[in-house]
Image 1 (cartoon, rainbow, N blue to C red):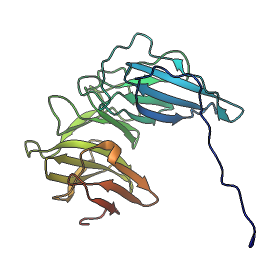
Image 2: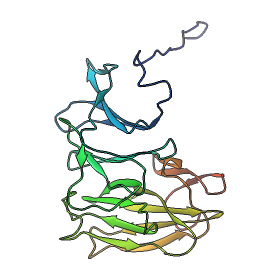
Image 3: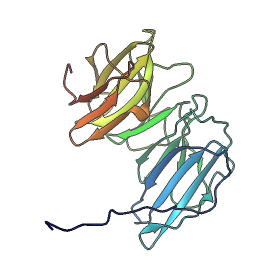
Length: 245
């Protein structure tokens, strides 16, 4: 209303007890399965995965340990990656020597079945789970069987090599514009690729941008009909998925 003042909305601590004075969150994700339940899922550098339940439409402020028998050793720079496929949460801790985990909304998190590859990032697109950032094949994009996130060796599962040995590695995989976009980066070099099609019989890989990419999956986000990302050289770009910037 013209001529009046409005109090700015404030904020408060979501939880009042810490997980440890030196514990750092390396990724937090909002997950809601078909059941309608709501959760915050977090990975922390104390090598734990926690959930926070929603009560009355808001997080209850208590982190519940759902690590179970999983064991990993991450640092504060191993940024987590999350995606949802077949109503399950797929979790990657950001360490390139571990394969993805999964959580279904009850019990503890567990290793994702079907022999998935070691990875640092995950995505779900066209009824496939995708993973990249493998410790021995950093330029390879892996995908599960069609409609089965727990099958990485049979059916229509497989992998795609994205310009191997070019001095860069896959740093981000993001669905958008009815395709999967693969961002590579390394040093001052980078590139952006597009994977179109519905399965490995129809997948087509195309290089969209030859000299600009990114260095982190967390440096790329989708806003409306565009990607906003930070390049390997620190510049900020808006990209609409077409050939050329």
